[in-house]
Amino acid sequence: MTNLTIGLICLAIMVALMFLEVPLGFAFVISGLIGLVWILGPNMAFNYLKTVPYSTVASYTYCVMPLFMLMSDICTKGKLTTSAYNAARQWFGRLPGGLAITTTVASGVFGAICGSMTVTSLIMPEMAWPEMKKYHYAPELGLGSIAAASPLAILIPPSTPLMVYGILTGTSIGALFMAGWIPGVMLLLMLSLMTIILVKIHPDWAEKPDKTPMKDKIHALLGAIPILILIIIVMVCIWGGITTVTEAGGIGAAGAIIICMAQRKLNVKGVLSTIKNTTRMAAGMFLLLVGVQIFNACITLSGLPSVMGNWVTNLPLSGSAILWIILLIYLVLGCFIDTMPVTTICIPLFAPIVTALGYNPIWFGILTTMISAIGAVSPPVGICLFLVSSKVPDVGLNRVIRGAIPYLVVMLIALVILFYFPQICLWLPSLMQ
Image (cartoon, rainbow, N blue to C red):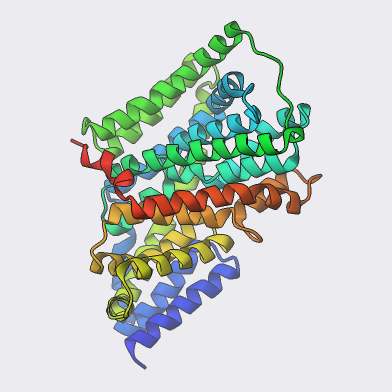
């Protein structure tokens, strides 16, 4: 049996384990180890297994993930995200579909704190839908906008999928973070514009809330200023080359703790409990990365990436056509699977092809993140649609899907714009010190 056949078998084993709901880290370890034993023999395979976990976990670069995860957890537990939502509601609530626009803006801010599309999909319905129901928002508008805005969390930095992409491809995480800002804000504005258009077409879908006194608006904005300043400081540190991305993550985590304790939103016990929770989550993430490294070694030794790369580059198609095929694969996978598994499965297969075609890996990282986000809200099985619907059981999934479709069109337009105008992604990274 050839090494290439072994690689394909191991890929099939990994996918089967994933659909059997084996934890993703273990699925990668098991399938990768089977392939290494098959190709190298037991002794060399287990020698590799002895060194990879330490070399992965001991990497200074990988420290960036638990630090940003801690920042996210502290901000969520300390209800700094609630302050951001309240400020957005006070300032944008009177616009047509103002509460839906508020949710879109708040999802963007929450994404700049959290970096997880799944968490955003679970938290925003609880935060936003009760207020929308109070003003008789149609579920198509309210829940559709919530589902569509949730993927902003993986596009606007700090984004966990972008961090993993940077680690696995050797691309600068700081550059990826900077590259995500303009596309993220562009998508946020386009989604907000679609909300206004929908309300103009269907005026009965949303009532205007009562006018908010300027005093209340200023008070709400003051409540959100600490978290906004923290986000700005972290991003300026990265963009200006003042600190490394890892150090910026440490500043963000320490700043979040200081803000929450100073405002008496968390005590020492609460901070320690949050650190414990973050440690558990980070352990699962590191297990995933260890598994990915073992699986990548198996796939690389099998020769599958180089064979695929040679085959694709010799196709009678343009580079753009090949890239659209790759993005279509991401889209299909993103409909069924969360962004993290899609990223970790596809990187070892497609990153060498993209490099061989001469495309910028930073630009490709943003495109794949965007297409994964689109897959997450694509009917009939987009994961964000199901998560949002699960938090509002009295509203049928079909109404959430119907409401998300106009926003899905907007996201596809945004993807096309980013594809044909790569400088939108690459301008900020080009200015980094």
